[in-house]
Image 1 (cartoon, rainbow, N blue to C red):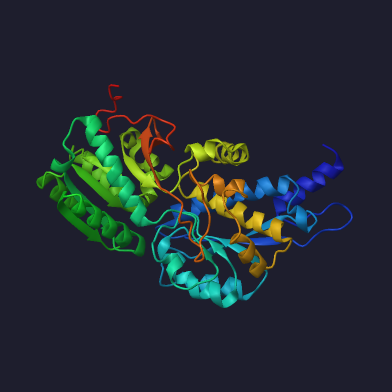
Image 2 (tube, one colour):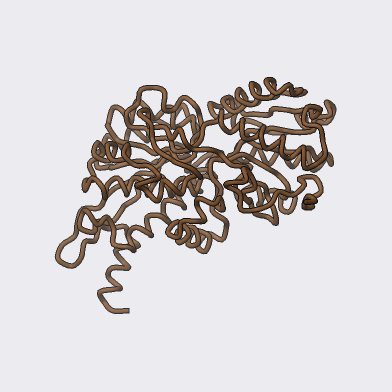
Length: 415
């Protein structure tokens, strides 16, 4: 390695702006806002690792070319895992100025509390995988939500259940269902949509149970209630520790219903760490899966994904991929506007769609664009199934890269 190459490598690692040897451009600051600490820190861990992988990709490929090769610097903003306090560090860091855009929060409760702060300091945020339906309906001009909303998750879950029941030789209308959810903005949004769609389909909701977010200590009473009611299909919306408690209790009681979760922890590497081989067969809706066809068709994303997997020894999870895409949309907006000014970034984000942005196209199949409220109304969720210790995209067929297997026997369906 030459001395010039070594110096550039050192600058990249340090996150210091580099614009060639004639002079250094100012670094471009992009914040990551999420639960880096606390009970939901798994969410923040995924997001931070993802934006670091994206940062390395940008900086090693010439930085922000429109700004003379300026490197990107990540500003971590820890909202902790307490939504009542999470706005304080966000306001503290935005009040200092210099941040061009924010990735996050992927957690809906934190995305919602961020809205007045984003509006006050005029800094745009792209919320990665946040799915609450009201995030882009509260008049904030600096919020962008690329993910499908919870209401769309529920529709996809029900469509998938029909498909699954047919393959399993079961009568869809005879299946007894349960809705389990934490009482957060995201959990309640999921449950509301599940309840509406199941009742509209004439299904029996045998159990509906909620619990205080982050406070579940023992899921055995919930599982006992599910088993006693003869529940065939469970629709859970839980974060990491609660998902672990729920599934561990099911396994301990040798109770194995069909699980079609509402995303989050049921799509994360932590579930594999907690359950081992028992993770196989679990299904979940999600806004994005690492092997959906839209992503597999984009080689530049594949480069970042492979780096993430190589350096972190895990597949890239359902909050990681959208965090990368959110980061790259902000970078693309800076390049297009030739400015790191956050208002310019906001204006350029509004113009992006899957026709002019390969990163937007990688989010989901079909056309993608932000509407006047900053919502990607064209995004559709997908269904993943854990197979061989890894989530695979199995539904809908136009997005799927793998075949569904029977979630109870783990055997392929006869064709």
